[in-house]
Image (cartoon, rainbow, N blue to C red; front, side, top):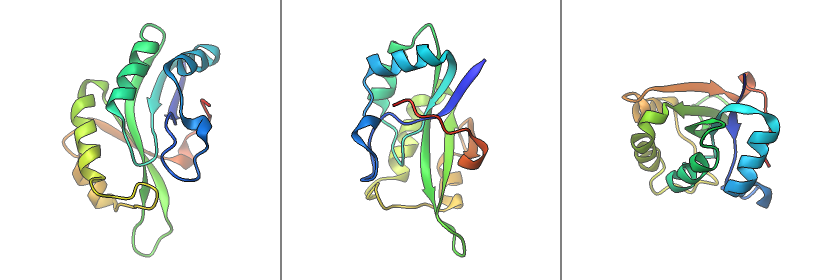
Amino acid sequence: MKIDLHCHTIAVKKGDGPGRNVTPELFKSKIEQADIKIAAITNHNKFDLNQYLLLCDAVNNMCQLWPGVEIDVFEPGSKRWHLIVIANPKETELFSKNVNELFYGDNLDECTHTLDEIYNSFKDLDVIYSTLQLLKHNKIA
C-alpha cells in the first residue's frame, strides 16, 4: 500500500510556487496516478478545513485523507526545522481549531513554534509527529 504523508496543496510561504495551489481535480488525478491509498495534507503552518473537505470528496473511494500541518520549529540553541503533525481524520474539526489557535496572529511565512507550544496544542488529540528526515518527499504538484 502506498502512502504519502507530506502533501502540499496551498502556497502559504513566499518561497512556495503557484504550483502548490492544487485543485480537487488535479489532486484526485495525482493520487490516482500514483496509486496512493493514504495521504495527509501538510501545508506549511496552515490547515484549511474547507479545502481538506473538498479534497476528501475528490478522492472519496480511492484514498483515505488525513488532516495535517507542517510546522516551523525553533528551539533555543538549535536550527530551525520542520515537524509534521498528522491527526486522526475523526478529529479533523478539533485539529483545525487547534491549528488555528496555534497560529493565531502569526505571520505564517516567518513564524516558528517551540516543541512545548506544539505539544500543548495537540496533546488532547490523536496525532502522530514526524520530522521530514523520516519521510520520503514526493510532490503532488
